[in-house]
Image (cartoon, rainbow, N blue to C red; front, side, top):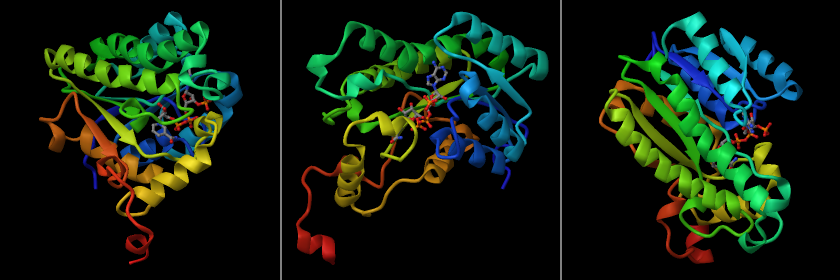
Amino acid sequence: MGLLKGKKALVTGIANEKSIAYGIAKALNREGAQLAFTYPNDKIRKRVEEIAQELGAELVIRCDVSYDEDINELAEVLKRNWESLDIFIHSIAYAPKEEFKGGVIDTSREGFKIAMDISVYSLIALTKSLLPLMEGRNGSVITLSYYGAEKVVPHYNVMGIAKAALESTVRYLAYDLAKHGHRINAISAGPIRTLAAYSITGFHLLMEHTVRVNPFRKAITIEEVGDTAVFLCSDWARAITGEVIHVDYGYHIMGVMDREEDVKK
Ligand code: 0WD
């Protein structure tokens, strides 16, 4: 279709072909965008390089967002190779596994710091370092959130707090970025079975519940998130910024689960 022809996109957070970022990269590629990927460590480098080859991504750059040096180096490598950037996909989140076991009340100081640093601060730090590359490009930034930012999702714990902070960060950054002509939005995706999802205690029950409650009774796919990302990055969304778009088949609009007999109809 070519909605993003001529645009250069940096996609972070691809771990494998189940990652939401992979679904987004595939959709951006289909619409003609040039791609660059990041990987955080050597453990997943090979997999990301294979995906880069599959989707024709030109650059594969190491960037662990816990390190300022990596963030600065990423901007340098992009500048050397591309000179400019139009799209930045932030699909990164992390909290230590133990943080998903008990309740929020059991959150450790260290777990809290790590979750906020990797899942929230990284959006601010990366956006700032990429800003010079986006100058004059009417750029678009997208991050990934989840319903646990708005309502209590048992066991999501500190990550729910981090996602609430992330959504607030999107609004504040939207204000800052508007001065440069850029937009930033969050996609709040329904639960999807990815590597990150396996850390969350009882994730399969969460999936089942979401499918049972949403009006379409369907599970979200990474392709559906990818298509939404294309729209948000395209000029058709030029007046949308600071927004949290739910891609969840309407799960978030439901106040009460409907009756078995309604489900069967
Ligand atoms: O149900 C889900 N899977 C949902 C995920 C529903 C709604 C939102 N999300 C969000 C996640 O919270 C995250 O922000 O989507 C984003 C992407 O998550 P994903 O696609 O579910 O998970 P995954 O495929 O595991 O990718 C997350 C990636 C990491 O993968 P691993 O599994 O290796 O931790 O985040 C990246 C990494 O590629 N990542 C980092 N990147 C740079 N530096 C770092 C880091 N320090 N830590 C994690």
